[in-house]
Image (tube, rainbow, N blue to C red):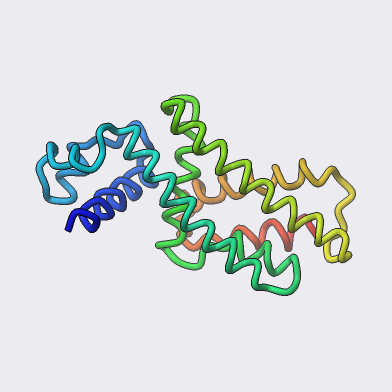
Length: 184
């Protein structure tokens, strides 16, 4: 029961962060949503920062699965498309949450900033490696600095997940704007 309750608390907090951001998150709001006393959350997390770090851990695990799936494709364009596309509402939730945390970055506790920075650097590296292989294989015709192009893709994806809500498109297919748009 303990593990399931911890996961439930984390999932509710993740959803709250994806919708409203880290500042809005509170143990009381999570407790109300989960249907437990606020004091019960302290059995699982000693403070909001620890809960935030758990949220990032869950996001990173989920994105890692997405990376592994993307790498099963043969062509680099297909890999990039698969990685950038969030196929359903549940998948979009993780990307929206990391986008919101990135947007709120300067106001976050330093340990949480460090986790997000590490995730972001790994994300950038993953995209950069796909671009490098794609250029080598002549799949991509990129005449710009690949590091900058990879950073542009990261930035567009963060913006895409945030603005996906504005345009009421929860299944934002960012890949159609990126790989179909400016990589070819």
